[in-house]
Amino acid sequence: MEKIQGIIPAVFSPLKADGSIYPVQTEKIVDFLLEDEVEGLYVCGSTGEGPLLSTAERKKIAEAYIEAVGGEIPVIIQIGHESTAEAQELARHAADLNPTAVAAVPPSYFNYKSLDNLIATLREITAPIPELPFYYYHIPSINGVDFAMSAFLKIAQKKLPNLAGIKFSSTVLYEFQECIDYQGGAYTMLFGSDEMFLSGLVAGGNGAIGSTFNFAAPLYQKIREALKKGDLKHARAYQSRAISFIKLMKEYGGQPAFKGMMKILGVDCGPHRLPLQTLKSEKLKEMEEKLQQIGFFEWGRNR
Image 1 (cartoon, one colour):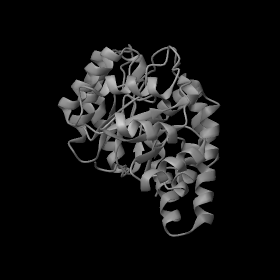
Image 2 (spheres, one colour):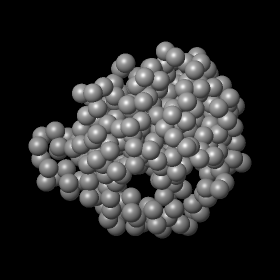
Image 3 (tube, rainbow, N blue to C red):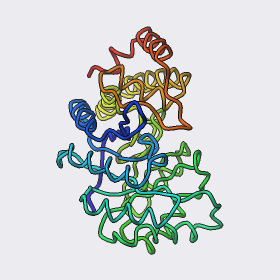
Image 4 (tube, rainbow, N blue to C red):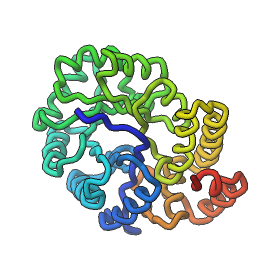
């Protein structure tokens, strides 16, 4: 299986002012991200409000991103759904689009009693697409599904033949490293905590998927380039800057602030779906001013 690497934004699903999807805007988003030299896209995940979109809407968003990318960079489509039947439908549709891979967060309304139970669910979801590389989306802070991923790999390697790796959105770094080392690096491990991007690289991660890569990819590229040169001092300094702007933006709601930032940069991705709340214009302006004060638009946007 092809190893996906590098800086991969978890892209937004653009909406119109009335809350309906706006697939044509994906072209502008993709052009913006390609200019920032990102190395892949992650579609309909948490940042893309996948759980808040209907199956039909998710299909259209996936189609739009695949078309806009035109094969220039890898695309991972997130197909997880609370209904395994709907997840299978999304899986079949994704396969028709020929993405690089699919990923899935598991249904989580009911608790999992064991890893076997979780893996049986993932096996059912991926049954229609045995040839397409699959990434498990591990995000315990949101869905509460919190098994040790090293133990997951030991069972999944026998029962999920198309498992390519894990989108690891947890801050338990030793678990991440255990998975990286498993069977000599057999699986692609993509880190999912932007605040700890440098730590994920040092642990040996193949790449990272993140919300803030949509508008701060140049800063994360500086972190990676400094580390490659063995310049840990500057890598840490750049990471500290990433932490500073993320903390500031979390004061404005996190996800709403991230989507609002795209509007500031001239790539309007529209409002949010409830229960997420769209950042009001006066708050967006206030956040922009504070980001200017800390210098974000110089060191966060310029290579």
